[in-house]
Image (cartoon, rainbow, N blue to C red):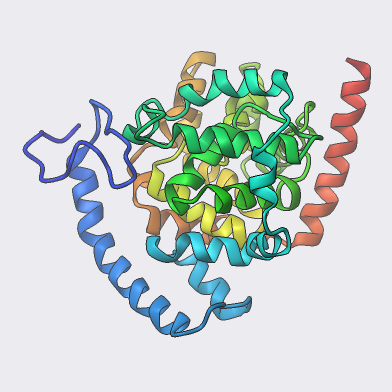
Length: 339
């Protein structure tokens, strides 16, 4: 049951998102009372780790720290470093500014102009070209679409770039993080055929069939496809799907470990909600169930959620995941040829 509005928590969160009318203030307040202690502890540890150093590098300790959450004030800097975005930026001085000077492909401009105002309608920073972040978002997407001509512009990139802007508060850093995601960490996710996304959905289905066969049979029985249920999970990298704090914790790991973490999150959502899914008894109920499990109390507590992601998903050898992806990519490609 949603909390009463006598809560001390603001109607707008620290990232600018308005809380929905059915927002459970009491559950969130309970979570924050615990999480603030965690944040304070992590902030001290990160400050000690960073010290006066400009870089943290990579290693077991850094990986452990990233999994436990990067403090917001360090998040943009650490993302840039561990993703390779910082190196790209330093190696291409002035490149972003040059891209914005044009010339522009008018077809791309038109597509971006349509999508930019639709980005995060519930966020106060994305409502005004003069005062807010819409102009910055437009610039990032225009620059990126002319930089990566293979991808150009794909729906969903506006949400990803928008969230990156909220974190970094910097156009050029957002551009290079977007490039790191699309080019290096998530190749073929945002191509016209989205073969990377479709492949990972097939991998998820195979893992569900192996680890939760009752769920797989249940979904299959009602004629649903995993594309219908989970495409948005992958294409938006859980933005606009899971609560914002949880999304940012996932992205901490995504920038460090790559897209394997997306599969961990997806399989964890299914495995920890197996009984709820099995109780849904028709096509519409199952679709609604998959929407609800991404915004229930288990998803709100991002710290506990991320601990479950690494515990529940279990061993995830990269070699096995790579082999599964190769098999499923071949299946997807063959299916596209027949279509």
